[in-house]
Image 1 (cartoon, rainbow, N blue to C red):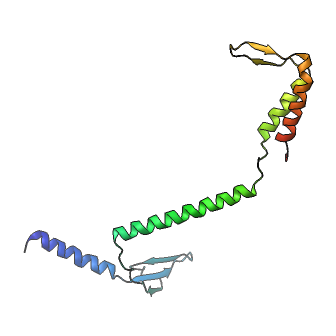
Image 2 (image 1 turned 60 degrees about the vertical axis):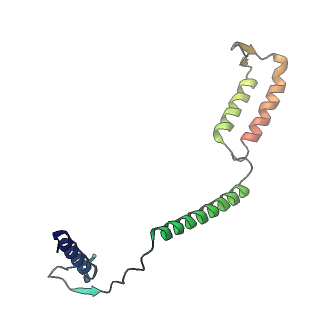
Image 3 (image 1 turned 45 degrees about the vertical axis):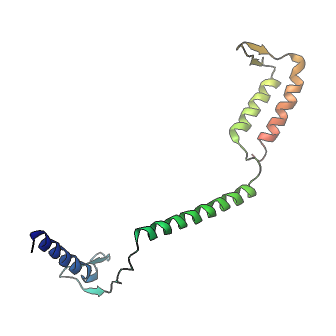
Length: 149
Protein backbone atom coordinates (compact mmCIF):
# COMPACT_ATOMS: atom_id res chain seq x y z
CA UNK A 1 0.00 0.00 0.00
CA UNK A 2 1.21 3.51 -0.81
CA UNK A 3 2.16 5.87 2.05
CA UNK A 4 -0.37 8.49 0.84
CA UNK A 5 -3.20 5.95 1.00
CA UNK A 6 -2.23 4.95 4.54
CA UNK A 7 -2.22 8.58 5.64
CA UNK A 8 -5.60 9.13 4.00
CA UNK A 9 -7.07 6.09 5.75
CA UNK A 10 -5.70 7.28 9.09
CA UNK A 11 -7.25 10.73 8.58
CA UNK A 12 -10.62 9.18 7.75
CA UNK A 13 -10.54 7.00 10.88
CA UNK A 14 -9.60 10.00 13.07
CA UNK A 15 -12.31 12.15 11.50
CA UNK A 16 -14.94 9.46 12.07
CA UNK A 17 -13.97 9.19 15.74
CA UNK A 18 -14.23 12.97 16.14
CA UNK A 19 -17.71 12.96 14.60
CA UNK A 20 -18.92 10.39 17.10
CA UNK A 21 -17.25 11.99 20.14
CA UNK A 22 -19.40 12.36 23.24
CA UNK A 23 -20.42 15.90 24.26
CA UNK A 24 -20.77 16.83 27.92
CA UNK A 25 -22.54 19.69 29.70
CA UNK A 26 -21.39 21.20 32.99
CA UNK A 27 -21.82 24.33 35.09
CA UNK A 28 -18.74 26.13 36.46
CA UNK A 29 -18.40 27.75 39.89
CA UNK A 30 -19.69 31.09 38.48
CA UNK A 31 -22.91 29.46 37.26
CA UNK A 32 -22.01 29.52 33.55
CA UNK A 33 -22.98 26.52 31.45
CA UNK A 34 -20.30 24.94 29.26
CA UNK A 35 -20.29 22.22 26.62
CA UNK A 36 -17.31 20.21 25.49
CA UNK A 37 -15.80 16.82 24.77
CA UNK A 38 -13.99 16.56 28.11
CA UNK A 39 -15.33 18.26 31.25
CA UNK A 40 -13.03 19.30 34.09
CA UNK A 41 -12.47 16.58 36.70
CA UNK A 42 -13.72 18.64 39.66
CA UNK A 43 -17.26 19.40 38.35
CA UNK A 44 -20.38 17.35 37.88
CA UNK A 45 -21.12 16.81 34.19
CA UNK A 46 -23.78 15.07 32.15
CA UNK A 47 -23.57 13.61 28.65
CA UNK A 48 -25.64 15.40 26.02
CA UNK A 49 -27.33 13.63 23.14
CA UNK A 50 -26.17 15.25 19.90
CA UNK A 51 -28.51 14.75 16.96
CA UNK A 52 -26.91 13.30 13.85
CA UNK A 53 -26.21 15.70 11.03
CA UNK A 54 -28.95 16.20 8.47
CA UNK A 55 -28.81 14.76 4.98
CA UNK A 56 -26.10 16.22 2.80
CA UNK A 57 -27.29 18.55 0.03
CA UNK A 58 -25.71 18.91 -3.33
CA UNK A 59 -24.13 22.25 -4.25
CA UNK A 60 -26.75 22.96 -6.94
CA UNK A 61 -29.61 22.14 -4.59
CA UNK A 62 -28.25 24.62 -2.02
CA UNK A 63 -27.72 27.31 -4.67
CA UNK A 64 -31.23 26.91 -6.06
CA UNK A 65 -32.68 26.99 -2.55
CA UNK A 66 -30.74 30.18 -1.81
CA UNK A 67 -31.90 31.84 -5.05
CA UNK A 68 -35.53 31.01 -4.30
CA UNK A 69 -35.32 32.40 -0.77
CA UNK A 70 -33.60 35.57 -2.04
CA UNK A 71 -36.31 36.13 -4.68
CA UNK A 72 -39.09 35.65 -2.12
CA UNK A 73 -37.37 38.06 0.28
CA UNK A 74 -37.08 40.74 -2.42
CA UNK A 75 -40.76 40.38 -3.33
CA UNK A 76 -41.78 40.77 0.32
CA UNK A 77 -39.53 43.81 0.73
CA UNK A 78 -40.93 45.50 -2.39
CA UNK A 79 -44.50 44.87 -1.20
CA UNK A 80 -43.70 46.20 2.29
CA UNK A 81 -42.01 49.34 0.91
CA UNK A 82 -44.99 49.95 -1.40
CA UNK A 83 -47.40 49.74 1.53
CA UNK A 84 -45.22 52.09 3.59
CA UNK A 85 -45.07 54.63 0.75
CA UNK A 86 -48.84 54.48 0.31
CA UNK A 87 -49.35 55.13 4.02
CA UNK A 88 -46.95 58.11 4.09
CA UNK A 89 -48.10 61.63 3.29
CA UNK A 90 -47.32 62.78 -0.25
CA UNK A 91 -44.60 65.11 0.98
CA UNK A 92 -42.75 64.78 4.26
CA UNK A 93 -42.11 67.88 6.31
CA UNK A 94 -38.51 69.00 5.85
CA UNK A 95 -37.18 71.33 8.58
CA UNK A 96 -34.34 72.60 6.37
CA UNK A 97 -36.69 73.48 3.51
CA UNK A 98 -39.06 75.18 5.99
CA UNK A 99 -36.22 77.24 7.50
CA UNK A 100 -34.99 78.27 4.03
CA UNK A 101 -38.51 79.37 2.98
CA UNK A 102 -38.95 81.38 6.20
CA UNK A 103 -35.56 83.04 5.73
CA UNK A 104 -36.45 84.07 2.16
CA UNK A 105 -39.82 85.44 3.31
CA UNK A 106 -38.11 87.41 6.07
CA UNK A 107 -35.66 88.95 3.59
CA UNK A 108 -38.53 90.03 1.33
CA UNK A 109 -40.51 91.55 4.20
CA UNK A 110 -37.51 93.45 5.64
CA UNK A 111 -36.86 95.23 2.33
CA UNK A 112 -33.41 93.71 1.97
CA UNK A 113 -32.17 94.09 -1.60
CA UNK A 114 -32.87 90.77 -3.30
CA UNK A 115 -31.26 89.72 -6.54
CA UNK A 116 -30.86 86.78 -8.85
CA UNK A 117 -28.01 86.16 -11.22
CA UNK A 118 -28.62 86.24 -14.94
CA UNK A 119 -27.03 83.93 -17.51
CA UNK A 120 -23.86 86.08 -17.50
CA UNK A 121 -23.60 85.78 -13.72
CA UNK A 122 -24.46 89.44 -13.13
CA UNK A 123 -26.84 90.36 -10.30
CA UNK A 124 -30.33 91.49 -11.34
CA UNK A 125 -32.08 93.22 -8.43
CA UNK A 126 -35.78 92.84 -7.69
CA UNK A 127 -37.91 95.91 -8.37
CA UNK A 128 -40.07 97.27 -5.54
CA UNK A 129 -43.22 96.76 -7.62
CA UNK A 130 -42.40 92.98 -7.87
CA UNK A 131 -41.91 92.55 -4.12
CA UNK A 132 -45.62 92.00 -3.11
CA UNK A 133 -46.00 89.15 -5.62
CA UNK A 134 -42.71 87.61 -4.42
CA UNK A 135 -43.88 87.89 -0.79
CA UNK A 136 -47.17 86.13 -1.65
CA UNK A 137 -45.25 83.34 -3.41
CA UNK A 138 -42.84 83.05 -0.44
CA UNK A 139 -45.77 82.83 2.01
CA UNK A 140 -47.25 79.99 -0.02
CA UNK A 141 -43.87 78.25 -0.02
CA UNK A 142 -43.62 78.65 3.79
CA UNK A 143 -47.14 77.28 4.25
CA UNK A 144 -46.37 74.25 2.06
CA UNK A 145 -42.86 73.62 3.43
CA UNK A 146 -43.68 74.07 7.11
CA UNK A 147 -46.91 72.06 7.10
CA UNK A 148 -46.75 69.49 9.87
CA UNK A 149 -43.78 71.08 11.69
